[in-house]
Image 1 (tube, rainbow, N blue to C red):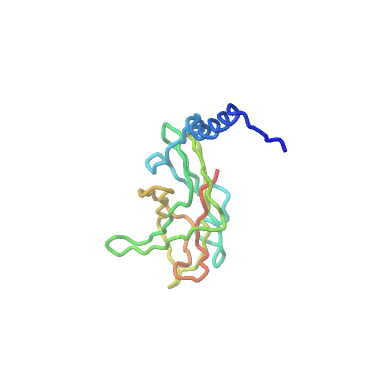
Image 2 (cartoon, helix red, strand yellow):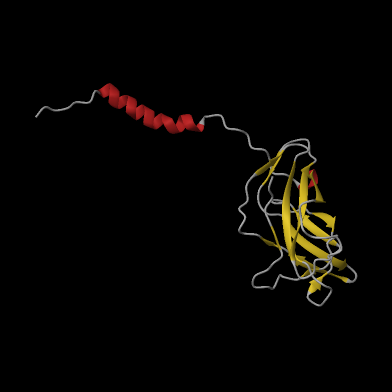
Length: 179
């Protein structure tokens, strides 16, 4: 049986290709990623698209309110994930009561890039309520954008909200930031 010989040059080229490929890939130019959006460069506002009514006339129903997030900074920035949302009522002297929204885990977050002046949104889902013991009638919503520790406040126009923090299947939650 004849013996098959592999030319040394062909084997050397294969070895060089296999060892150089990771090095070449590491030196490929990459697209620079915009930094994370900072709270100080974001303007938040209620926007259309939700089912909640000012004053909270939809009692005992789950309703939605949509928040727009606008990049007021000079550079593009990115957001990914869920904002933290806490409703607050009362004062520091009287005592502050709050209701924190859970994350809506059925919606997967995606990275959203905001150019200067660009906007994104997120949706609050909550159980509207009548004034009673298990209800909070908030004055503000304290909102912390994803990957931030500083928050912004929005006046809460949607009326009372049923407390859900202790519920087995809470109906007060927030969706991720989307374009």
